[in-house]
Figure: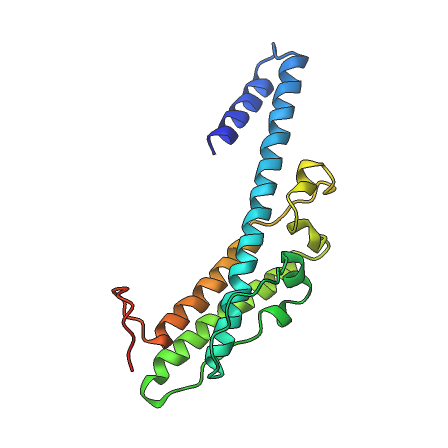
Amino acid sequence: MTFTLHVESALETQRTDPRSGPLMCQVTGDLQLLADQHFEQAIIVLARASTAYAVYASQVAAAVATGGPAPLPGSERISPSDVITAAGLYLPDIRFADDVAESRVVAEQNAMMAQTRQHLLDLITNQMQGTPSASYDDIATVAAGNDGGESRLVEFPDALHTYASVLVWALGVFSGVSQEGSGETSG
């Protein structure tokens, strides 16, 4: 963040100072490119981490919702482009069954899971059209300049992370884990 502020300050000085020469223009241009590349690489790193989190949380939640055992983390690596091109496969619609005693809690959790999933799907469908899905897979494409100047959406890894967090929260609610984090479970 501080680096970006320094670059913005240098760019503003260049724009407002008539004495800015070609060297100043070159340096600030290079710094701006570096800041943009760093930002794009950070989005890719976050998208990759959030993809792993969301896909595994989805697998565990789907298993728990159907009464099955939670799967162990697999060795398969799902890339952000996999989720972008086949979100329904990797992030299926998950609903916990209504329990008469806890029907309000179940309804709230199901609604929150559906809402955050739909937000993610809408983002993929409506805002990421036309952007190559593989542009979120490898930071080397930004470093090498092979990304065609793609502008990645920071909202994508954020939506993935939010969805995974909602799933994990619902799993905590339905697993009987106490809020104090003592690890005690009911029943």
